Amino acid sequence: MEQVLSYIESNNERYLGELRELLAIPSISSQSDHVPDMRRCAEWVAQHMRTIGMQNVQIMDTPGHPVVYSEWLGVPGKPTVLLYGHYDVQPVDPVNLWTSPPFEATIRNGSLYARGAADDKGQVFIHLKSIEAYMRNVGSLPVNLKMIIEGEEEVGSEHLEGFVKEHKELLKADLVLISDSSMFAKGIPSVCYALRGLAYMEVELTGPNTDLHSGSFGGSLHNPIQALSEMIASLHDKSGRITIPGFYNDVRPLTKAERAAFKKLPWNDKKYAKQLGLKQLYGEKGFTTLERLWARPTLECNGIWGGYTGEGAKTVIPSKAFAKISMRIVPDQTSVKIARLFEKHMKKIAPKTVDVKVRMLHGGEPAITPIDSPGVRAAAAALQKGFGKRPLFQREGGSIPIVVQFKRLLGLDTVLLGFGVPDENAHAPNEFIHLDNFFGGIKTAAHFYDELPDYWEKGSRRK
Image 1: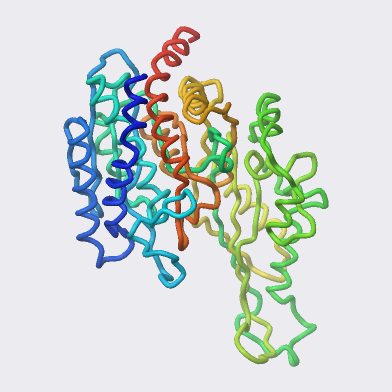
Image 2: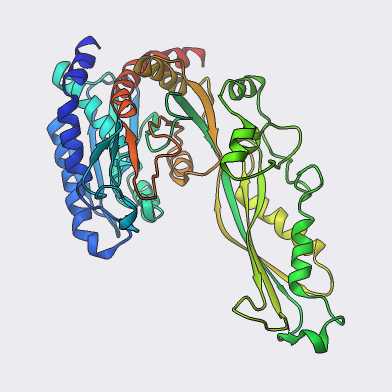
């Protein structure tokens, strides 16, 4: 490790130069005029994999943008890591809000600004450099490694599930490693070990068979907007608890160790509320804000509409009213079961004055990798060595669908080892990555590959 770490330290400037080359490619997957740039970026990543010593490097076509695959399988008997990342980036509009050009990486105040700096080119590049340090100084890696770097993450990874299904044998591994997330905050290294899932619904209420004059008909029928509002308002009780029967039946409770880990995080409710422009926070009683954000299920109305919303006045009772409602779910809930409970409940509480239709628009499952699993323990040890601080443990309130797909299709748990920060402007102008996190990330990745075999062996012995 001394040679590896010394090599990393002595090549920092070169790393930045190479990263600038990668960030200069406008690989915007959502825009058709950047299709040639997508191919050029895939070729750059593939060539760099070859340069650092990865083998069987392939640019594998999909119905959309290509996936770049490579492997190094030189230590039979050691764990095999499947490293996932993406080389596509978000659009840059509005360009006038960028302080420096989005595809000209610029250093300001200890951070590197460019589209893709944190999401996800910079974090993929962190691993490429840690691999290079091993191959140039040791001639091998401590683990077997497979890499898939895709080009459609920013447009929903539409073709990745099909790719994984088609290449199950090629992608066989012991765990997945993803660096496409954030630490808790700058200077606070953390390991994310769980994600919430999602059940996304649309509700349609129909009253009269046409829009009606509110003067001529008002007082004789139930306005669908009012009826829908009453239904939505009833979905929480006064303590903030969701009122759908059976909704909480499968919720996995937090362990004492998890609740203790959350309390160690530097969190302040008053500061959080102030940042959001709120006088007071709201949520399910009996749980802290972090517990509600990460480990408790939620139900939120994302939008409600009906009738006339244009300029000026139009005195109308609408025929229909609509709402979109999302429910974030936690281990061991499932999106299909929660959607079914929601639909049953909405039909039950709908007044007889209206007809109700409920549709599930999208679903995704929660994911969790136990804190005491070999991968998470190796990640924690690596972060402590890479950043010189004992890391903390956190969950995320959002969803990463590919994590669930890897579990469902390959049976693999995922270690989320992110080096960004929550305010890095990942999808906005002036995206950046802290250079301390970038260089600390390269060391941490190197330590992770070094630590994993020992933790994996200890975990196998416990089994």
